[in-house]
Amino acid sequence: MKTCPYCGTKVSGVDQQQYYCEFCVMNIPAHMVQVNGERLKGRSIREFALESDLEKTTPELMLLSNFELLYLLKLARKLRSDMYNNMTIFRKAGEEVGNSDYKSYEDQTGEEYEKLTRKLFVIENILFEREVDVPSRMTESFLAKYKENVLYKKRRPMIINRQRKDSKNAANSASSFKRA
Image 1: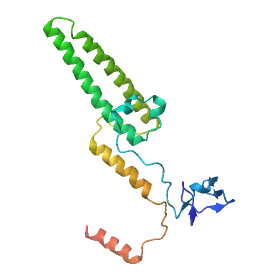
Image 2 (image 1 turned 90 degrees about the horizontal axis):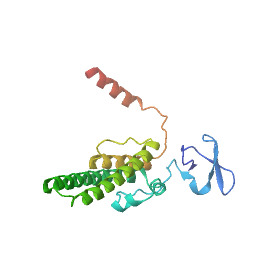
Image 3 (image 1 turned 135 degrees about the vertical axis):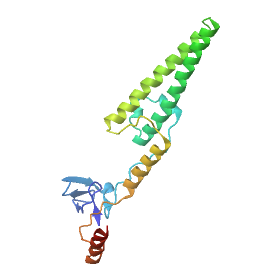
Image 4 (image 1 turned 120 degrees about the vertical axis):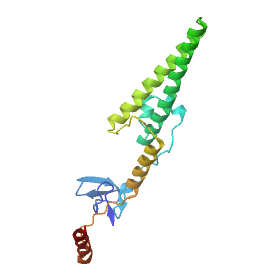
């Protein structure tokens, strides 16, 4: 049965190039129509981000998936923290030695720190705009769970079961309430 890729409802053929979904009230191109309530496959998500992705422009970052942005956010936060620590080390080293040799290194790391902070703002704001909850601590377990949820929802067909469970199952569940 040919179904709508958005709601899973049976679609009717308008012509050979498009179908119509009464629930969504829209025409659907033939290449998007699914079978038996399957979901659109969508593009596959990359399971990582590279440090070089931080060099991307804001419009390029906007093309990345939420998962890629979350992973990139984790990476950027780590790099930013490292940069801040380096900036502090150069400042303290300059104070101990008593000369300004370390000042240029401190300034360079300060500029890189500011650049990374602005990139973090960009990534966070793209995610906020997409209404993605951004945790204050980005852990590997959070990213793994996020990816698992995305992949699970993509695989699950849009089938609605309106039949009641048989009376035997209903009786079993009722008796379990009495025992508790």
